[in-house]
Amino acid sequence: MESLSLSSQLSVNRTSVVGPNDRNSRWGIIKFVKLQRKSSYNIRNFSINSCFTTTSYGEFRDGVIIVDHGSRRKESNLMLNEFVAMFREKTKYPIVEPAHMELAEPSIKVAYNLCVQQGANRIIVSPFFLAPGRHWHQDIPSLTADAAKEHSGVSYIITAPLGLHELLVDVVKDRIKHCLSHVAGDADECDVCAGTGKCRLR
Image 1 (tube, rainbow, N blue to C red):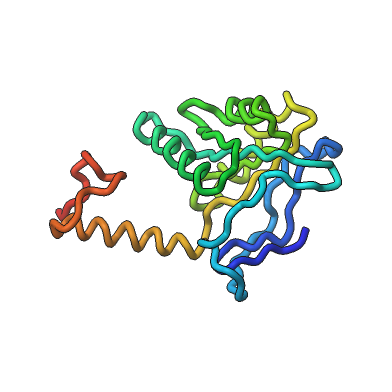
Image 2 (cartoon, helix red, strand yellow):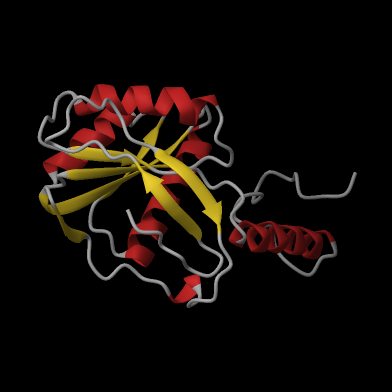
C-alpha cells in the first residue's frame, strides 16, 4: 500500500486487511503508523470525495464503525452518538454507526450488522481511543472478528487509535482556553461540562 501523506495527518505505510478472498487472516490492523510533516495540503481542507473504491476485490462500499469503551453513564454513551452524527456530516460517509466495546449497546456486532444491512461490503472500525492499549491490541480485534463470522463476503480493517496526532494539540488547547474563560466569567460551560459544575477552581 502506498503511503498517504497529509500535513499534520497520520501516514499509513503498511496495512493488513481481511478481504473476502483471504479468510485465513482473522483480523487486520494498521501495523505501522507514523506522523509525517512533509509539505502537502492542510488536513482541514481534506474531504472524502467518494466512499466507493475499486481494488483487486472489486468495488467496496464502506461502512464506518466508531467504537469507544462504553460506560454505565447514559450521558457518556449518548455523546458518542453526537460525535458520529458530526463525523457523518463532515466526512459524507453515508454509513456510520456508533459502537461500545462493553457495558452498553450497540455492541460492535450490532453496529457491524447494521453496516452490512445498509449495503456496506467493507467495514472500517475506528477506535475512539487515545492510546493503543490492550483494547486496541486484543479486545476490539476479537470482537470484530466475531462479528465478521456472520458476513463471509465482507472485509474489514481496524484503524489506528487517535494516538500522537498533532491536531489533538489544538483540541486540548481549545478545551483549556474555554474552561479558563468560563472560570473567568467570560464563557458558558462547554458541552462536556454543562450542568456538572466541575469546571471551577478549587
